[in-house]
Image 1 (tube, rainbow, N blue to C red):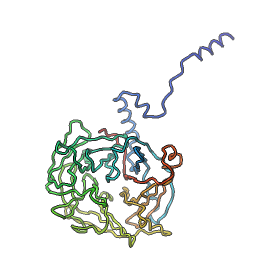
Image 2 (cartoon, rainbow, N blue to C red):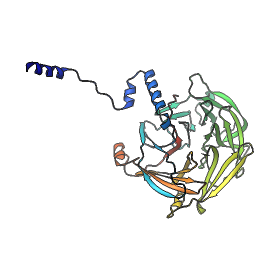
Image 3 (cartoon, helix red, strand yellow):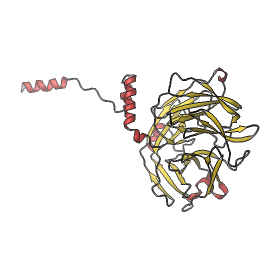
Image 4 (cartoon, helix red, strand yellow):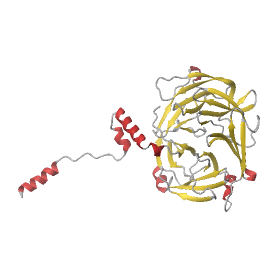
Length: 386
């Protein structure tokens, strides 16, 4: 009897095992830097197939906090009719503090192979949402100090390299600066544009920010005194070209937005008075050949009038070729309209559970709508270090 009691007491006196953190980031923080990086990369490779599926990255800022949500882009299961439905998808989310100087919401930009680069700043800023990290790049040169610059981000799918292209803001150029990301040995270098031009990105309410499509970066510019064109930049060979606008040199027929559509450059706008979408698709950049598709999405119960209220904005297109229109603000759910230009059909999806009551209470967001949304379509995860 005495031996049993003593054995129990010895068991009680044994030191307890240390608690294991439930948060993977907490575990990684306790490892040496090289080990943490290796574990992170191995984990990323294990889940590569899931991570490379295109997602919607939805962000908004409240005070000095940046809130980011990643949700799956839903494929259309019934392309022969228009319909609406609600979803409660798995949502990957996080927040960052002291983001007011790093995330300029007024500057339109795009997600390029997992990285995001802001376009009008005093220093080039690259954001990797997967790593939750902002990286401020050095100025392209001493003469750029204190000046606003226009920045574009391109990606070469052959060599797997991101390149930042930097130009003076509000100034005609025939030479720009370029930087390849991912190497400590890379430096800014000068690249001749072969065309003296003025980038017009960020100078209008029209969405003129650049798009990188299959290794070619596109952005709006002016040649001479007023001729408006689209400039192209081959990211791999660092060569510039000029593409004539399909509607003429001097004035847009309506507010237009450049998007990637089935691997091609497209310019999309809509006519409110007749509820019609116009979409020009670049079929041949060398011959400046464009095709035009004008259509009105078929609707049920008047739901096709969604863009007349000016509550939705075009974000881009899915890999399947559906146009993505996102409501400009969030209440309890995120509303997205997907439009199929070929079948002239649409579907409206309500993503629930993004900003529910519990989320609002925890973050002091109140009951009102949350606006100033930035939506990045076809976003993928990357562990690339900057």
